[in-house]
Length: 206
Image 1 (cartoon, rainbow, N blue to C red):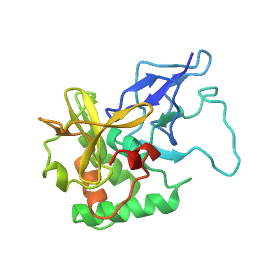
Image 2 (spheres, rainbow, N blue to C red):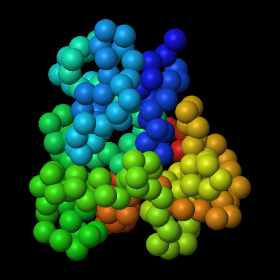
Image 3 (cartoon, rainbow, N blue to C red):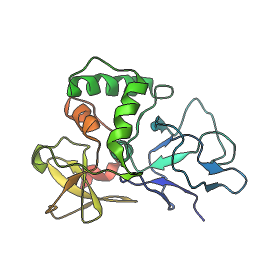
Image 4 (cartoon, one colour):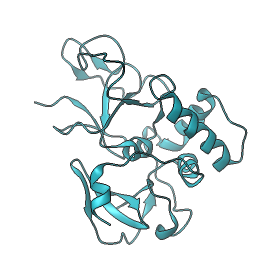
């Protein structure tokens, strides 16, 4: 049975076999004895996206009383859920994200804690995923943004929407009443030049 540690663009943590391209965490939210989630879904505002490989280190997933390993299809999925790049294992990417986040939001480069405060306010509403109105037409959204319609998530790539699935992206009809899943401040960072890593299937559905 797969562990309950895969994250959807809506921030939900589900049990599916697919692992994805990135890991990350929201603090300690599991019981290492049973390797199951606790009732809480975060213990810190620092929701981060990490590389699955770092200097040859290996961890037993959900096997210790340390951070709970979560997994994402790709970086666009993680950003949509409300995570940001880790300054420890992905320093170059995290710095690029911070600088683009500052440009896109019209502020001086913030520290990680300041970004986390803004993101926490944008990703949740009464402890559930917060969706936002689209700030511009779909074909003007930057590659890597994720929107939703009818409970389904769609990646924007090449000016078109592609349906998110645990296995990757699929050709889709244009959503009729979309909402923005990616937090607005992160969308501004992407629009200002940050390039999230997309699952390989994103290049096959243009």
